[in-house]
Image (cartoon, rainbow, N blue to C red; front, side):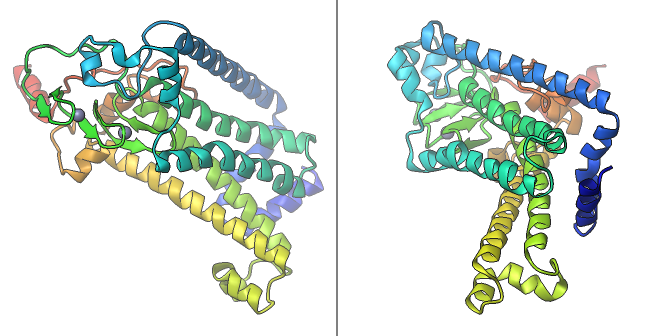
Length: 368
Ligand SMILES: [Zn+2]
Ligand SMILES: [Zn+2]
């Protein structure tokens, strides 16, 4: 370990629990061949994901029925006119509502700039850009960020309603009539007021993609927020170390008030403009991490209880099959691999039209 590594580790000691988490790349460095092998695997997965996305896009603008985010249930019944026409298909990808436009703008413009700042301003404080120590850290971080965006793209392309789903013409038990769509909707589906369509196993409307999260794109959303949480945690720990370097004497108990009310500290000249900006940046990182933690814990809570967010709000408990089965119902049979890459197939046990409920599980156990 060279002196910059040691200095950095000493800095991290001040951050406490994050130390172990952040020091892992240093251990990678010791066994460099293992690290190279890891990079090779990540690159392969990245390439596969890019190829998949490209293939989907060509398919999307070219020909054929596509997974349709706003597919109306009438479309699912066989009337496919809603998804025809290149212009219509491309138009569907553009967020229409104000909140969707703002959120998607943040995700596609602001966040990449934010990550760029961390790679080329904050990280080089300890490791010169494109040096060995920098590359060793930047590659896995870039992979996490890449996975956020690639999962997000899959989430938007796939849509919550999937494709080739044909609703039965008879009213099946559990179906309910949707007055907005004027059709019978399957159990667990709910009408989205923003997309103005019924969504299979609707979780919530995701403004960051202008699309609902439902049965067929839930796994991509979960994988994206897991990576988002991870990278937020890493970058927050870097920015804490960065701020403690900028403040003479580091972050001490006596200076904590300057972190919490930096504008007052700046107004009374306890902080210079540069320090004030650094503290604001750290506060912003904390906000991002708090938001990511909320997203991850809300999803974990719902998986634990076998509910979607809508069912949680409506207090529906009928579909809780136990934690592992709940995860399998949402993320598919290869749920343990979904965080690695969206290109890994993970077939869902349900077609989105019928779901196993607690009563069904009880009956099945009885008949054994
Ligand atoms: Zn509806
Ligand atoms: Zn929606």
